[in-house]
Image (cartoon, rainbow, N blue to C red):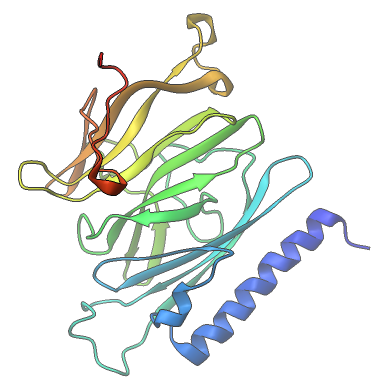
Length: 255
């Protein structure tokens, strides 16, 4: 008899099979394939990449993740023919017990499990896109990630050296009970495209390195797009227009 965790893994795999059948019927890039409320669905602005990710919680408060990637090689969507082939990559069921290494890349069989909720509009270079993801981790900490994905000559890899050094991804790991910002901001007239996020710090100096006690310190950092690289800038302004055209009020400033 299968354990509850084994049953959850089987369910994730069954979702993958059903998703393939839907793609066969509707097409990977059809509008119908975006309205799946129980999973994350993101699509690149050039309509060449679409990623579905889904998860299941386990009894020990970790998570299982699975996913599917569809990619149109070689051409932009504006020039592709009706019969152009689409590459598919199944992302194997993985768990969230260990974070991915910052200087390693991974294939579909051992990808860094996450729910991807945003994608930078354009690739930093051909076949390399930047994803933003969320990972429930283990109940003590939560993670968010800036995760490059590259699909080149039929090979999919997570991680790419687009941060100005050997670093392949950027991770935010913080206390499970706090909220942390990680969002993409498009290019504006006087500002480059960027990915902005909370700067994290421990609750006390003696907790340095113990991420279960980390949270936002009311400052922000950002990766700013500089050619084909994301360049880190620290202590940036984080002003954002809210609903009703109300300006964002920086809590660090006196009223």
